[in-house]
Image (cartoon, rainbow, N blue to C red; front, side, top):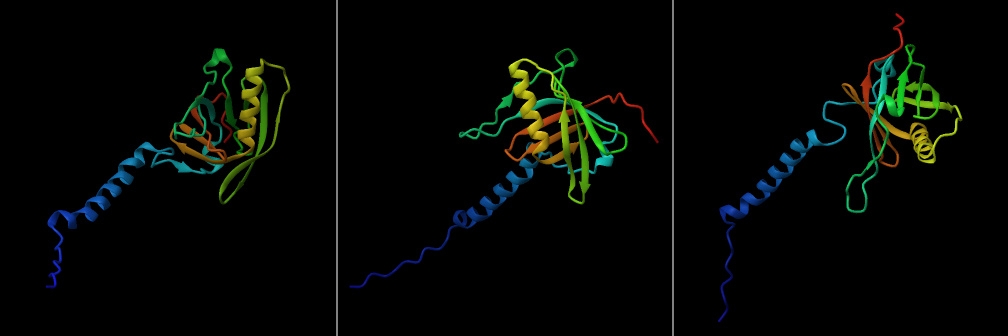
Amino acid sequence: MPQKMRHLQPTNQTSKRPFLAFFLLTLGFISGCANVIPPCGAKISPPSSELRNTRWELTRWNLPPNSKGEVRARQIPQGEASNPIQITFDTNGQRISGSTGCNRFTAELDEDSRGFSLSKITSTKMACAPQRMELENDFLYQLNDYRSIIRNGDQLLMVGNDREVLSFIQRQSTQPTNK
């Protein structure tokens, strides 16, 4: 005797699963926006005119995530007594200069519709402790090869092609303003 096939009607619980999954996914994207770098309100590739006559100090250097997805921070000297790494945008918007913590550097600013890039990066060549020289070399490499710059108020993020993120805080500028 042939058996009758029963068609299962989706229960109310089963029909709600796709909606629930969509809702949770959407909620994750919305709430996650506040926790990612760059922050939601940040300005990616700000024009150099917004950075004229500003000075920035490196306060954090995130290394790329390891194989477990964990972000690690690189140790960097901070504060005036430790010769911090600093960047200063000139009043004309054509150059940056600063300190690597050991040596001074300068670079030209080139700008197009996608943002600005740095070229002709030069630095002095004083000898420093090996750890400081390694940090300086890595910093100058990041300046030469970054992917994007993001500004969020008094925070400036430099994202490298290798996914390293250098985080700067704006400091009081020491240069006079030319108007």
